[in-house]
Amino acid sequence: MHTDVHSAARDGSIERPVTRVGFGGCDYLGYSRHPAAAAALVAGATRYGVSSSASRTTTGNRPAHDALERAFAEFVGHERALLLPEGFLANLAMCQALRSIADTAVLDERSHRSLRDACAGAGLTVRTYRHLDAGHACELTRRCGGRTIVMTDGVFTADGDLAPVRSLLNGLPADALLVVDDCHALGVIGPQGRGTRAMLGTSDPRLLMTTTLAKGVGCYGGCLAGPAWVVDGARRDSSAFICTTPVPPALAEAAATMLGVLAGDDQRLERMRRNAGRLRRGLNELGIGPGEREPETPIFAVCLADGAAMRAVVDHAASEGFEIPLMSYPGGPAPCYLRLSVTSEHTIHEIDGLLGALERGMSRAAAESGDRRGPTDLPEHARPATVQAAGLS
Image 1 (cartoon, one colour):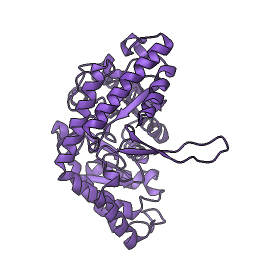
Image 2 (tube, helix red, strand yellow):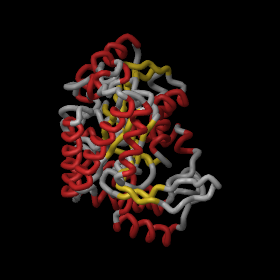
Image 3 (tube, one colour):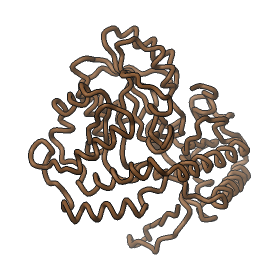
């Protein structure tokens, strides 16, 4: 995976891009550049144009939208699905659909910010539980009384941790609902990359799903999925669905095409998981990895002594031809961290090259600062969650 990096010169002009091997982003299977996606997009644009130019409840619905909903529901094993313009709005639509039966949502404290915003937008009261602590989530749910929604990422955005979904289902009251945002799980975990539900092999009707089509599927749009009463409620009551222009139908056709590709692309999934394992083991050897992880996920958070040390590592990696992001993204293990991701399209040579560049960059940063602290020498609140919570599932 190669990234063209554009930098601005002092006069404001854009200098010639520099191509580096990128270890960031969320195109985990490289599907955004898959020939089948491009061909379906072009064919769809020729058939439908670029935009449907109106909401689906007025004149903007197209057969491509309906077909994608059917294909998605079948792929993830839910009764029905609803297509939204993007993953953020899928979370809002889900909360708007459920607000008639619940007034409180219990969220993992490091869940994606869109879940919290969705709850606020739907008028739900939010309570948070300790990261990955299913017992705390179930305790809060019992305290809340009434029917409650528990919400969590399936695979966490910042560091690739897996939510303890089975433990949540086992401990929650029978009438509670569990919404799992599978934005970083679809195309990553479960048989054929079908996500959290398929990974667990469960048909529990309390388990609902939201996701994006922009990461593991490599296209665009968002979906929610669950029993008919939930999906029909979102279609009927959610302004996030009713009052928005949908995904362009050409992109809907591309996404449906890529779901079909994903269902038969075990080799690419295996490459991604193998590459994730190789990078994880290498990071562990450097003392900055997550430890053991099953199943493998392609996301890693790295925290060093301070922001200056991490910036020095980023700059050194760039000098060796690698692009890695230094982030201050909500929900991370620290205010500032390196978020590394690996794809099916990275080579062994590229992964090993990155690990070497990280090692040399860390040594250089330590020598310049005289500070040789590793991630476990940081205050507990600033350590990667995978160091704090090893063994949780």
